Image 1 (spheres, rainbow, N blue to C red):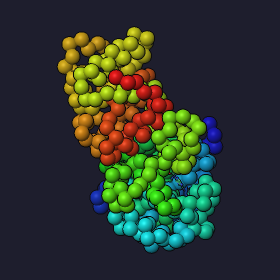
Image 2: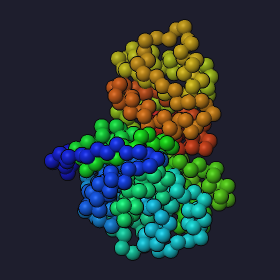
Image 3: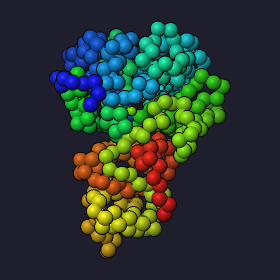
Image 4: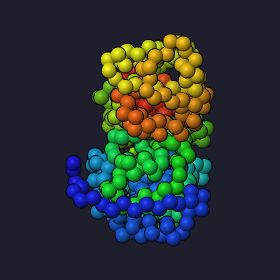
Length: 365
Ligand code: AMP
Ligand code: MG
């Protein structure tokens, strides 16, 4: 394994997500200001934080996560004025979007200010900034008295953590502490929006839906690299080019509606994998979940099955997605059959993560 030879003593704080206990936050923030790395809850997923001005602290994040060095980090702030030192200029669009969507799951990419460590932006001339809505995140930034860089608190390539337990399973012994503030409410990462050009571009779909941004801004484009299935188009958000968000089992996406045709196709495929000796899991809409449970000829093939919520409820799918993928790992499932869900609202982010995790293995029903 790269980098880490000695095991770090990982501290743990159980903390109120609504009224974070000051004494605990001050302990965690003094680790951040002393150059350490601490995981904390945000409304999207758990982040792994370090002092945004301290390159050596930030190096520890890359090591702990085994994150590729060309994948830049998001800087988290608690107050709008903290943006001043981070960017060249606070543009009217930035001001408008901040007023409308912050605190919340929207990350803005802007020309970077002087003095931001290279390691934060991985050499790019832009910086990504977000103001999280979670009280624990806010108070941690406040008591640390500086912006905090925070990628998701998982090893690179693995599903993101939505609970402190997910963080501990992946990062125990690699980080200085974990603040346990319960389950992340949104469940997928922030929307990354590039506002350096005339037309805003979504580099990564996330917690703030495309439709909301269109209502606020008029035209909003999706980065062409996102749509591509091939290797040749380069996404502008460096992080989007890697296989990502993936459980250990092999994921297959089933493109089918909330109907019995899809249910049958998934059960049949489960049977085939099972006969080949694979342990099979199914993630699907509530509708298909109920249909499968009603089937007479359902075999013993399905080791693990979970509903991601109703077909018309992409928010539920977002909240449940990563914990379902973590459960597949705990159950040592080899083959994970997942029903594709509508890309409306936050569903676009859900399908983006699933297609990434599946390495684009898609089955048409
Ligand atoms: P993570 O915090 O691990 O969920 O990943 C942060 C995401 O933001 C990655 O996809 C990064 O590539 C992206 N990102 C961070 N900074 C920039 C930037 N300056 N320009 C474009 N994308 C960025
Ligand atoms: Mg991540």
